[in-house]
Figure 1: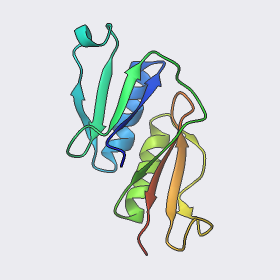
Figure 2 (figure 1 turned 120 degrees about the vertical axis):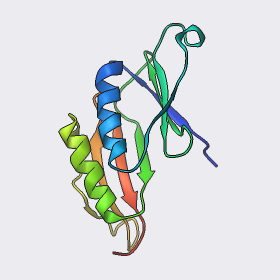
Figure 3 (figure 1 turned 45 degrees about the vertical axis):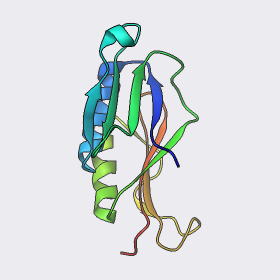
Figure 4 (figure 1 turned 90 degrees about the vertical axis):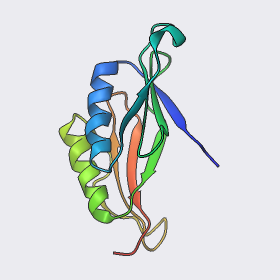
Length: 127
């Protein structure tokens, strides 16, 4: 259903460094930047594994209250995402662990990005 999503960020360099580290831990990276002549001189870039799925746009209204969950293949990737995101300046919003109130095999970790967005890595597979 959803092909891609994007968020506004207040500090391109800080947010890019955070997402570069967090996404590298789950096999994703910055795949594309849009030339500034098409973005009113703002930095815009898309992250993904094979195509840009998650976009950062410099400017606009960044901030808390938004939640984005990224599906991964293993619980180890959830753990790696959390550690990388925390090392890159993220703030803890839920350490890696089971969340059986969602479903039996739900294993996730939640981190607040530099603008307060709640980003999550989640595995739905049994251990």
